[in-house]
Length: 226
Length: 226
Image 1 (spheres, chains in turn cyan, yellow):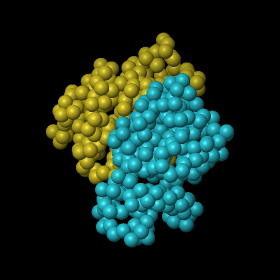
Image 2 (image 1 turned 90 degrees about the vertical axis):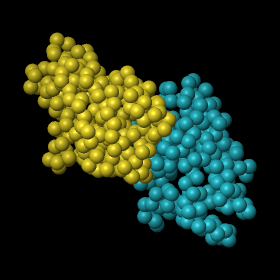
Image 3 (image 1 turned 135 degrees about the vertical axis):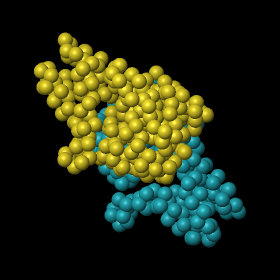
Image 4 (image 1 turned 135 degrees about the horizontal axis):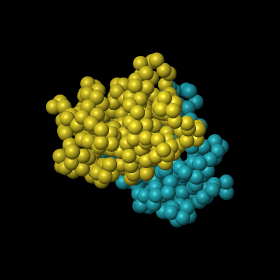
C-alpha cells in the first residue's frame, strides 16, 4: 500500500459544527442544527442525479447553492444571494476533527496522503490551509467531473498517481464510500465519527470487509505502525 | 496576490546534479555531465512539438524516454530498457536546491503555494516527498494535457483555484516561462540559479518586467515579508 485516500466531509472535517455555526451567524432566530442536517441530507441525492445523467456536470458549490435554496424556501427562511453564497463558502472552512491534522502528518511520513472528495480543488485547498491538513495530492471532483461513488473517482486517483488500485486504501466514515472503493480493488479503512451528525444517530459499525477499523485518524496511524 | 506557482525543474530542484549522478551510476565510463546537458537540451523542443500539434499528447516520461534514447544512440552509448527507465525515473528524485524546502514552507504561511510544471502529478508528488516540498496544490501537465508555455497551463491553474490570473505569480528561473505567464495576466518573479547547468553559462539577468527578482526562494520569501 502506497496511497491513503481520505474522504473529507465527515471523515477529516466536522461539517456539522462548521455549518451549524455559520447558519447561526447568518440566519439568527432559526433552528441552525435542523437547517444544517436537512441541507446535508440533500447532498448525496443531488450528486447522484448528476452521476445518473439526469443533470449535466456542475461543480459542488453550484449544487450546494441549489439544495440550500430548496431547504430555506421549504423552511420559510428568507436569505439573500450574498447570505447563500457565504453559507456555501462556509464548507471551505469547516473545522478538522482534533485528530485529523496530527494523524495526517504522521501518515504522510510513510504514505502518499490524498484527499479524495466531492469538493473542488479550490474548496479542498482552502479547507487544508484553514486546518493545516498536509495533503500530498488533492483528488477533487472537478479533476474528473465525477462524484463519488462513481468509479472514475477511485480509479482516477490511482491512475493520476500511477499506482494500481490495490496500492490505494480509501479511508472514510461512510461505509457506502468504502464499499464502492472496494468494488474497484482499493483497500478500505473505516474511521468512527459518532458526532458527525451533531448528536443524531450515526452508524459507526463499519463492515468486516474493511481492512482497518479505527477510532480516529491517529488510531489508524498507530495501527499502520506510523 | 494569493497564489505562487513554481516552475520545478531548475527553479526548485537541481536536475543537473540529480541526473548527472544517475548517469554516472547507470552508465559508468561515459561523460555523465555531457549526456545530462544534451538530454536536457532536447526537453523543450519535444514539448514544443506536442504543443504545435506535430505530435499527439503524450506524458512527460514517455517524451523523456524518446529523447534519452536519441541522445544515447547518437553518443554511441548502449543501454537496455531497464536502464533507460531508471534514468527517466531519476527525474522524480532530483535534489531540491538548499533554499527550496525552507523557502516554500515560509511562503506557504501566507500564500497558496503550487507547483506549475511540465512533470506529471505522480512525478511531482514523488519529487515533493523526496525533498519535503510542501505544495498546497500540484499543477501538472497531465491535468490539462498541455505543456508550458501553452496558455492552458497558466490559466488552467488559476481556474482550478478559482482565482483571477492577476492573483497568481509565476516563479521561475527561465525568463521565457515568465514572459508567457505575464502575457496571460500573471505576475512574475525570477529566481537566480547560476548552477542550473552544472557550471555551464546560465542567463540569470531576468527582465525589468518581472515583479520580483530574487537570489533564491528564501530571498523571495524575505522580499514578500513572509
